Every structure is written in structure tokens, then in C-alpha cells.
Length: 112
Length: 111
Image 1: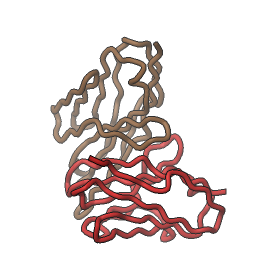
Image 2: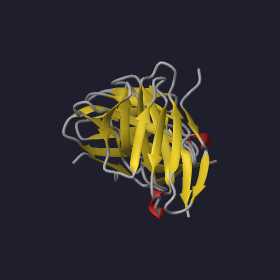
Image 3: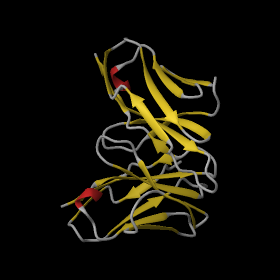
Image 4: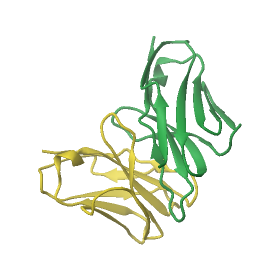
């Protein structure tokens, strides 16, 4: 069964304190791994897509990396506006469908 | 460009009632997927439609159904509502094989 586990469940940092979020996955075949940001009561906002081990993507203070079993979302010198829940999802290789399998998310709080 | 739109934004129903949620995809996107997100958890896949045909179904009971219209908009229907159906219902649109972009969601509360 395809499965995604994110850790930690919650993380509280001081402004400027860098850290990493983990996404471990088990999937029969990986079509892609996705990172989304979700603010309370809103829909997920797309951040990155990674397709193969060794791939890295960067956007402002965020950098996503991918290995064969896990992905990391590194956040460098975060600001309070980076506070949100970060969701990781995998798209398994399934004939005729494009479903995403999500983890439970990491709730990130950045204190000023 | 307009993103994915969903209506209504909030809805309150009582047990046993029926509900219809609506979604309009990003212009040019022909694929619409529906997800259910219970508070504190990640979204769970319900359906995917592409070119008006069902392409995938998640592990949800037959009380859940959906359809896609010629203009690629979509409806999600839930019959015989249960308390456990209270959740944020998300619609995502994409081109086939590409990144899914999510709408703001419909918050459903079943009393």
C-alpha cells in the first residue's frame, strides 16, 4: 500500500533558525513527489515537484530534495510568514489515474 | 488568470441530507480531482475525472458520486450525510500528467 509519513508533526522555530522537514514514502512506483503549503482554512498551495532521486528544487528560503525513500524540505532563515502546514504527497504509477497520496503534514510555526 | 474556484465556501447540513459541491478548473485544464481533508490530517483522494470520464476512485462509499461537464467543471455529490462527512472538500485541476492545483475548498459541517 502506498504510504507517506511526515515528521515532525509540529515544529516551532525562532525567526532565522534554519531546519528541515522530513517526508518518508513507500510507493510501488513513483511518478512524482510534491510539496504543498497550506494556510489554515485554505486549499494547499503548490511549491515543488520532484521526479527522481538526487533532484533538488529551490524557491526563496525553501529547498526540496529527493532520495529513493524520502524527501526533505529545508527552510533557511525562516520568517514568521513561513508559518503554515507543509504537506508532502506522492503520485504512484497507476494505470489511468493520477491520484495523490498525502502525508499528515508538518505544522510549522516561526516566532518573531 | 483565475485559479480553481469552488462553491459554496461553507455549508451546514444535518444527518441524512444530501449535498452538492461545485468546482471550476483553471482554464485549459481538463482533469478535476476531489479530495476530503479531515481536520489535522492530509487530504484523501475521492475521485478523478478527465474528459468527462471517471479515471480513478478512492476508498469512499457509494454515497459519494461525481460528474464532469462538457466545460470541464465538476460536481461532487454526497448522499445520506453522516457526522463523519464533516471535512474540507478540495478540488484540484490539472492538465493530464501535470501538477494538480487546488481550490480554496468547501467547508462542510454535518450536524
